[in-house]
Length: 409
Image 1 (spheres, one colour):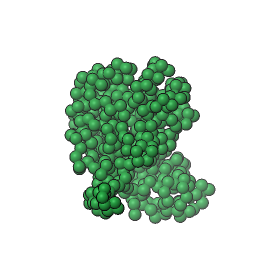
Image 2 (cartoon, one colour):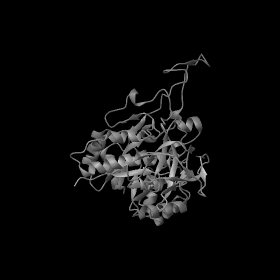
Image 3 (cartoon, rainbow, N blue to C red):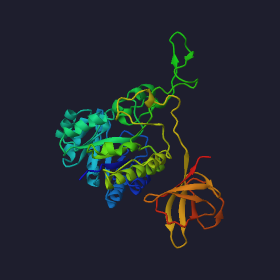
Image 4 (tube, rainbow, N blue to C red):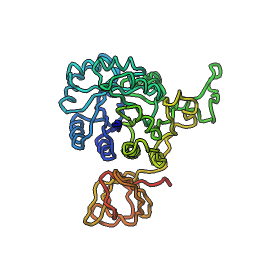
């Protein structure tokens, strides 16, 4: 029987975690308030981690927590207690990159499952075997690997070692995320979770003896985004990736919105399910890619999978996201007796708007807003306030976490 990879989704807070579960993620990876590489994501307090574990396990999914900083001496203060807390809370695995943290995990809980972060830049089968012998259950391989290299690592390592790869999301310009540029330019250490993303800034070229005279690097006077990578998207290559025998497909984005998580997870879930139903007859559905493009994104690239990236894999003119749709409402519930959807506003919308409803387990619906009621069931004509609760009459029952989106005007 062909193994179908686990689909992993990011979650920066509890709401995004619940959305990831609703839209089909097999596992969710999160960070706590300390020891992770996304210090500016919402991240989870201890009580929220406990709630997240219970919620995820209720639906038969898994939860992994990042402790993937490269630790300095003072970072170990309180870390043993935190690992003990995660163990008691029942998380399914921790994600580490630092050998010292790995050894501490083994000391605190020898039975805790350990995943090795992509930050550890595992690029060959001998390194994979080394980490497996150190107690690592799963390796999130470096993003700088081709399909052929990944296939060889799989063939030369035992089945007891799980392998995971990134399939979608932002790419880092530095090797496996080991960047010092943020530290140098902004005093924020990316290897300890505080990256300022200077690779997305615009740059000019200036000659030493001509101060203030900016020389064009590329295209126009606004500067050039010479370090600005396109976003990874491997949705079209489910067959090629799944055929290797990988254990996890990972979506990047703990700082992305819940809407992004819903759109991307659903697209990959549907393609993986189609592949699982008929591996031999599977062919990619182009509509899935069009769906993914309805979330904010940069132009797409396949990264290193089919060879080393070229100038075509960078976006030199802008670091802005492509945003063609506004996420305007999140469905909190559906009253079947009067066929009303309770919707929480996320961007202003009004009577007369044409929207599309994204549903977790069904096809999308086109919907014209013809009537709106406030929380007291009084008629209103628009919803201008953030997180305002409104009721919309909709014939089709809507699942919780369905989403209303509107094409940008």
